Length: 90
Image 1 (tube, helix red, strand yellow):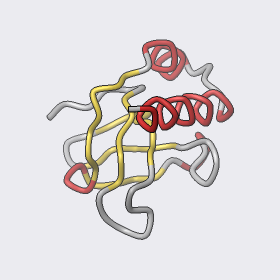
Image 2 (spheres, one colour):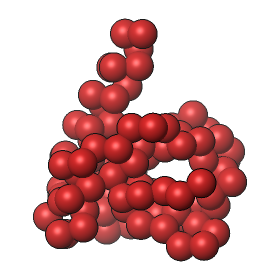
Image 3 (tube, helix red, strand yellow):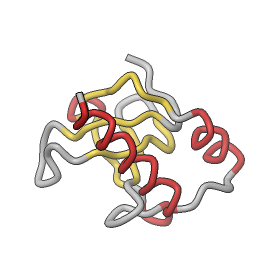
Image 4 (cartoon, helix red, strand yellow):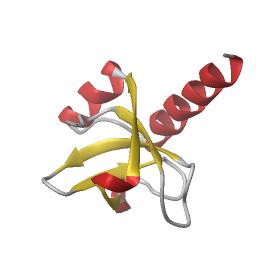
């Protein structure tokens, strides 16, 4: 599966299991993830692709800001919070 900047993913393994992150970049085996709290843009989490569950949700506004380098940790936190609220309502 291809991952893109701004995509929300859920951790499937590790001490952060079931936590949500936003992809900021990727390479062949790893994703670099942030959540705006414990994993900020300054210290993104490097996680193997096989250890995350992708969602179909890609925030285009956040994706554009990640690509241009203008996204903030507050925007990351807000995006994840809104996504969690959305899935809790279902």
